[in-house]
Every structure is written in structure tokens, then in C-alpha cells.
Image (cartoon, rainbow, N blue to C red):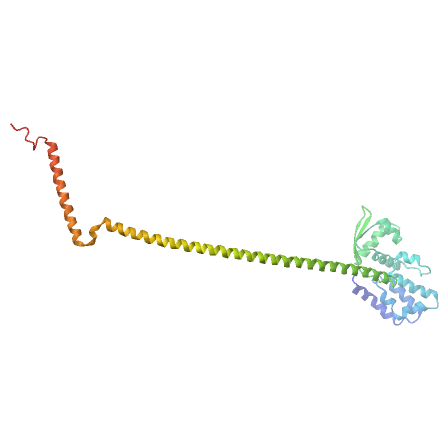
Length: 301
């Protein structure tokens, strides 16, 4: 249950408090409000002028109703029994105060059946389980009951209890200590952030210097490569020119007849006559080989 719903349940009693001008009517209004099964916050009713007037009532019985309403605002079942001269509680008021006592327990806590039975003055575990079931269905808390181990684990509680005036200094001191720890943590974080930024800046400067060295080294390598390629191209050009001249001279020597057409023709005719003489000599030699006596005058008688 959220605070908005709880205040809506209390709204009719706040309207009635304006007409509760007598101590008796104000005390009856307190009884009705604390017996209502839907009301769980009472701070606004306690601060109304008509209820505040009960503190100064001449009759002690009406002052006791004011203290009873304080118990329902921020007290527990134990506080009721330790405060003397309070009005007796009806069964609905007893159930209401026990439920409010459960809301005063620390959240995310684990309790045994025996401890809660003592705290709430309940007779049996079954009555405790019934009370806890009612609190869960009313959205006052979230809990897990374990009958096998007789334990109750409370996971969350609705913020429906008011703060007692005496608890404000303690709460202020607690919040002040928490704030001081937060300031110290923030200071440590700022220091660490400064160190990280300094290291990052130094690393960036080192990376930039290293990158500059790499670029200079690459430029030097490229210049040397360009010089080496230029020298190689010059040597290749000179070598190519020498080879071309040599090939030209060799071609001229191997074919001297290419100088003029007449010389080539004459040379061809001389070569033909030489080939003809060779053929005649070859035929003559072949005939002598077959007839050895021919030509020497042998065999004539």
C-alpha cells in the first residue's frame, strides 16, 4: 500500500476532526480512526488542532487518548504495553497495532516464529501466520513464510509509519554521517579521475611522439627507395643503348650485301656458279667410284 491510498483512507476522519470540538468527541474520533481496517497513517490526524487540544485537557483520560494515537503513529505493540494508563484496545485495534509493529521491523530481515510470537504476544504459530497473511494481502509487506524451518523472511515494507519527534535528531545525525561519507567518496573519485586524465594525456603525448618518429622513418625509407630506383633506371638506359649499337654492327657485318641492290645480285650469281661446279664435281666423282678404271687407261689391250 502506498501513502496516497493510506491518506485517502484517513481523509474522512480529517474532515470529521473539524467538528470534534470537545475532548470526548475527539477521543471517540481517535477510537474510530484506529479501528478502521483501512487506515494505517495517523500523523495528519494527530497534528489537527482539535486533537492537539487533547494534550492540554484537564481530564487525564482524554490525554491518554492522545498518547494512544501517538502509539499508532510511530509506536509498537511493546510501546503500548510499556506505557501506563492507556485506554484498552478493542480486537480491531489490537490487530491494527500488531500490523503496524510488523511495519516497524527492519526490511530484508529474517525472523523466527518464536521471536515474533513474543514480540506480538500471539498464542500460536497459526495466529502469527494468519496475521502475516493479512499483512501480505493488504500490501503492507512482502514476506516468505517457511513453516518447515519456523522462519519468516521479510523482503520489503510499505513506508507507512510516521517519525517520532525524538527520532529526528538521531535520523539527522545518521544522514549527516552518510552525507560526509558520500563527500569523501566523491573526493576520492575526483582524485582518481584527475589521475586517469593525467595518465591519458601523457600516453597521448607519447603516442604522438612515437607516431611522428614513425612518419619520419617512413619518409627516409621512401627517399632512399626513390634514389635507388633513379640510379637503377639510369644504368638500365645506358646498358640498353650499348646493346643496341652492338646488335646493329653485328647485323651489318653478317650481311654486307645489304649496302646496295647490285652488290647483292652479283653475290647471288657467284654463289650459283660455285654450287654448279660443286654439283659437276660430285657427279664426276660418283662415276669414277663406280668404274675405277675409267680415266686411267687401264684395261685397254
